[in-house]
Amino acid sequence: MTTLNSRRQVLQRMCAGFGMVGLAALIDPRAASAAGASRGPHFAPRAKRVIFLFMNGGPSHVDTFDPKPALRDYAGQQPSGALYRKSKGSGYMPSPLEFRPCGQSGIELSETLPNIARVIDECCVIRSMHTDVPNHEPALLQMHTGNVQPIRPSLGSWLLYGLGSENQNLPGYVVLRPSPKIVVGPALWSNSFLPAEFQATSVVTADTQVEKLMANIRNPRLSYAEQREQLDLLEQINRLHMAGRDGDAQLDGQIKAMETAFHMQRQAMSTFDLAREPDHVQRMYGDSVFARSCLLARRLVEDGVRFVTVYYTSTDNQPWDTHANHDERHRKLCSDSDRATAALIADLKARGLLDETLVVWSGEFGRTPYSEIRENSKDKAGRDHHHTAFSTLLAGGGVRGGTVYGASDELGMNAVDSPVHVHDLHATVLHLLGLDHERLTYRYAGRDFRLTDLSGRVVREILA
Image (cartoon, rainbow, N blue to C red; front, side, top):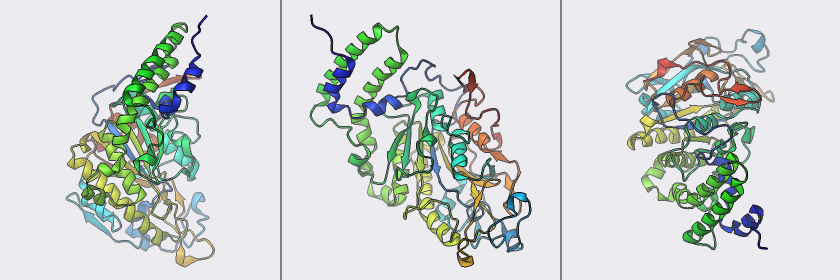
């Protein structure tokens, strides 16, 4: 008596052309789940997609978007309060940088951001951001997942769960990181307890040659038609298997995932190929890893990817964590980030994509307005972590450009005017994409969870 091979045996014999199948099983946004599929927006969205430019390490707000001339009057004085009584430095440290009014809006920016200055009228600067913890790991987790512990889904996963994908041939959520060594790592883009199809696809962008970015996606032996024939046969076997299991939704998701992996062989190789971009566009962004990642992010959202996170490190592979030699390092960090960020915003606008694409530029916190001295080297003072006030930049996607919202106190120590917590930022991002943060919930372990937990408000004042 002839019997059907098991699904494992079939997969083992047919796996040569499905290098992406395992990956697609995690990322296919169309796959059904036992907990429920994507539901669509709660109301008309202002944006369709998000690019999150993440400045890991924490940029200094008082050297970028939040001028504090009063620091000169207090230079050298020790900050007061229990949290700051051990400043590990020589007191308040004024920024050596000049701030100038920029654009028609006249928003004051540091001299280290000349390119962002040219697009500032497309942007909103929030100067009153704050978060809960001044340590990297919990602050990174809170900025990405709303929680200081690695137990919750990321913002991108929540968006994909709520809205689904615009493109059946690409992942709905992509993470571009310069190396595998990102602090915290995969927990920042995890689907956690959401179904596996809402997990991000992580791509290391140290080498942006398309064959390196999308390794093993092409079948080395079979044509597209031959793979189509195999996949159709495999689907029939899977359907027979599923018929005896009362419509297993997770198995149905796996079947659809294989279909997505198959289609990615055509779409992904085209989308991820930066060589297709004209020379003048590549020059506009620059030639660093971050610059090429920003250009790739634009190509991804242009082809229907819902959420893209780009992690920043400088050309010498340094984060914004400037505990020492701050003034010199800050200039180097800004030069690369400034150029590529501005190019992305300008490029999106030129292509008619900015109105429907929300760009977010932020770190997990800011840096102290006072100095940090390491190894008794006062001439190379740094700035420590600072969570009670920092700045975030937003552009496009329904945000009111040319505006400043909120303020920190005169020394940049605390958010005092219209404070914006990370939960508020998340609520606002969801709102711009048509989702009510209080209604976007998922039942797990006996309770309903949401990205903003039990708090968060939409910052309606920054909406266009």
